[in-house]
Length: 157
Image: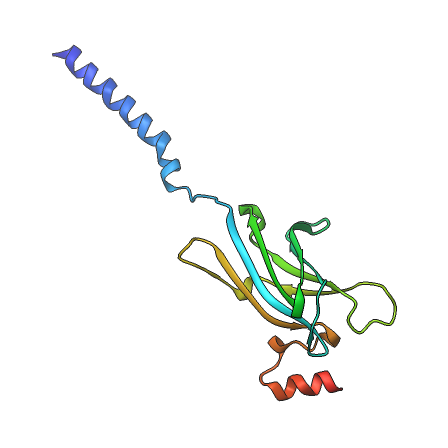
């Protein structure tokens, strides 16, 4: 009888140890890479601009921003940027636009846009980001104005 109780007690201890080791695995969140698709249009003085260099960058590090993906705008300023964004880089993402709009000299100018406010998670388990139209001239951007009249005032000033 005593050996039966000892055996049952040992079995119970082994079972509890195994369960306690697997518990953190069950509670832990899965850290997965998420595909991002960013679409939009870039304009200069109201006209679509091709060959604008567009970068998706992670700015969470304390060193240089890490470029995750890049593309160029095509005819009429339209672009589609796709990237597999690693879990650790999903916190602070920005779009960088390198352009010559409004410049007299051939140097590139940078326009940045925070990406977290314009993205939604889809049923296909990816992030869809619509940046709409981004005006590069004097940063007269449609996303900064309440109506078309304010945007036109900025473009014509």
